[in-house]
Amino acid sequence: MKVYKSRITFEKDLSVEENIQLSAEQVVSLYPIIGVRDCHLKGLIYRDDDDKLYADVDVWAKVTYKDGVTGEPFDYDFASMGLYEILEKEDGEGEGFIFPGSEFETGELTRSIIKFEMDPYLSKRG
Figure 1 (tube, rainbow, N blue to C red):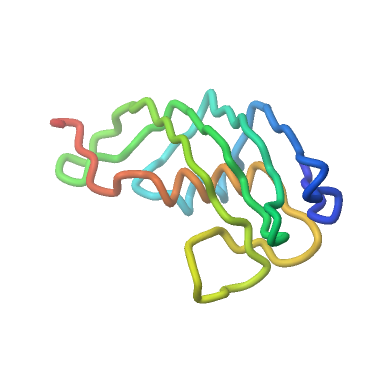
Figure 2 (cartoon, rainbow, N blue to C red):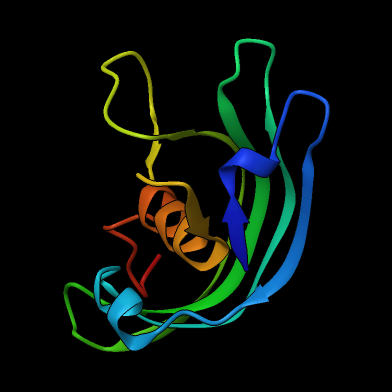
């Protein structure tokens, strides 16, 4: 789903709930994750009283990792709950995701969350 930033105001939030399909190019950028399926995004995108844009969302998916030691793929249930600032550009003040322009895709937000929250050292052995 395309999110238009200008349509979200202090008085008008955007509730999101959707199944997300990540493209092959989006998954490649998540290495050592090599597969993402059954991905779901749910939450709220809103502006605070300082006009900053936030996504308060949950993401869950079945992901396939490539084990860094054995090279074997293994499945993992990914889940994340978080509050993320949506930035136009780097502001040097805090953490958030940068989506320049007037809009962004929920799929790209989901990919960014998975990349930010994933454990890059997860191993099949635990």
